[in-house]
Length: 158
Image 1 (tube, rainbow, N blue to C red):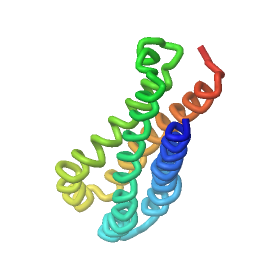
Image 2 (cartoon, rainbow, N blue to C red; image 1 turned 90 degrees about the vertical axis):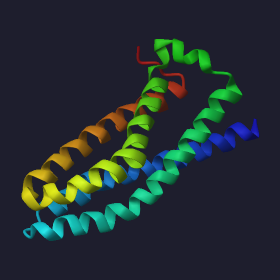
Image 3 (cartoon, rainbow, N blue to C red; image 1 turned 120 degrees about the vertical axis):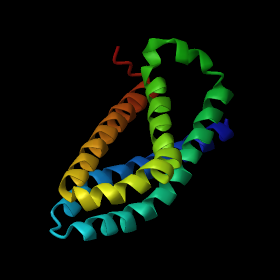
């Protein structure tokens, strides 16, 4: 059981760092960048700060996946994915898939190239859209954290 406890601690710490960073980018960084006057500085500032966080986000999403898979395996809890009462487990996987796709595929291969081009043409609009997307991702993440915390402590909402 000590292995399970360690996996859970790693899982929670990784999620706190990862989603906490998403919160910081959404609530602090992007609004501050949106208030900047010079368009060219917006992207430079965003990339400098968010780029440092992206490294940690990649590590924590990997740790989240490994620890989460391990906990489901050790508890033999696969059947929970067939029970709608455990909707939050599906939500955790869904959030993880979205962020993993963004961090490992979309950002390096698609977004990075297009972002510079869009920021040069439409600096205001680009960062407004980025902030809206971050708010959606953060909202989904917070609902998932709420459900997972409540559900893992026996409070099933439905």
